[in-house]
Image (cartoon, rainbow, N blue to C red; front, side, top):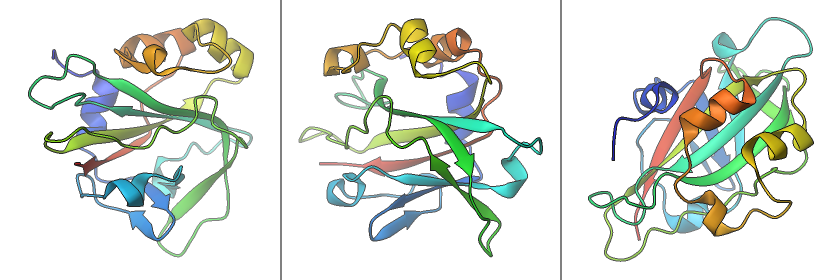
Length: 183
């Protein structure tokens, strides 16, 4: 696969300004391992206060992709879109300086749990958070990205992250993180 877009490069080199919360485990450090059962439920996210925009009323959009399908050494199906969540708003900061991203009751593209095939080595599941442009809503996201009401697996394959960011008018990624999972 060619070079990753800047947003993914930043997430892979992240200083973990994004935390991923699964029932029973909080993923803090970029590149740590999670088991398939740990990462199966849809995660919630929290972002470092230093990564948030200061203007009131800002909403955020999160995208998750698998960079390594079906195998890291032969990733011809990648990236695969694993989820897209929008209309996220900051909650109450915790003592560690992280703010939960809340709202956006449903994932626009529902979370697809990790599923690397045997005997694959670990896959990298990357999460990116962007400031959501004010005019962006579910209908505009679906139209811009040509997403059906129900996004099937075939529409998730060969995801072009850089193209999606341009079509949605997203700026620089504010925070990112990733974990590894293997079969």
